[in-house]
Image (cartoon, rainbow, N blue to C red):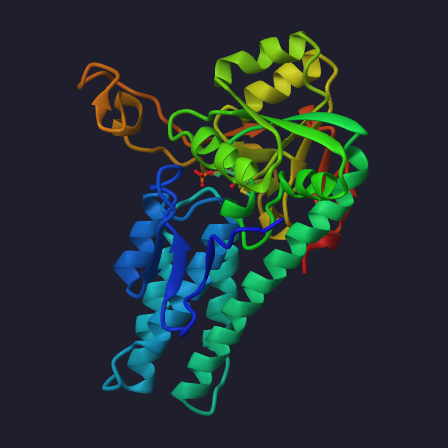
Length: 346
Ligand code: MRU
């Protein structure tokens, strides 16, 4: 099974290479990004998306911007311009904690002493590569920890895209599913389409089909009724930020799935790397939820689906309370309430 690489360095190391997720499922397009504007634009427009992937993109972005900075800058100007670039990237999306987590790691490297500018540029590159490699390993570990939770015949419902396209490796929510499929188990997936930007239908259905994992697409509004029919064995979703008490922000619609799963007695798992756990956020109430543009609700693919001036409410994420989560699958093991994540932070 070939796991697609959504975010990485270009082979010559001069660019951040992403799969442009806006073009999927129609076209598989890779883009090389070299400037601050291009990196920020790619994150804001969801060309690169998913909590771990945007953290990795931010880190690689800072590393390539550093390598391309004008030679004429003094060492102080160089450091100041990089710090400014890093803070600008941090500001692109507010909810996924992986983004500030990765930026803080890059700023920590920038804050250290280096013999010269070349050494600093090299150290930034090493750190960005480490963030990518660690994420790859964390995805695998999430898969291994989650695998025992997948029954012999498993019909798994998922939401949004928490697969390879959203990470540096095989995904978070999809990692146990990929490993179960690799073992030859009878595992299949129901993918909610995930309005309004359709990450479930455009991305999850695409990557599962490509990997040969049976996948059935459904409208978001069908999920509760599918559970009522007894067709779902478990739910696994990703997360963008997990508060210290286990409340988890994820793509809007996740909370409704958790309520429906609880009503029908179906296990509801959140799968995420420790880079998504935010011990500084006490509860979900403190998580900033990104509000997105009205145009995403008023049109699909450029075709109007609502009156052009209608008022909209378009948060990108919602928060599922810990009380509705059966367990959180991380790279360091499976946690359940009461959550003690302090020990999970690298
Ligand atoms: O707006 P997106 O597409 O970046 O939202 C992504 C999600 O909500 C994912 O479920 C989450 O980031 C986990 S990805 C491993």
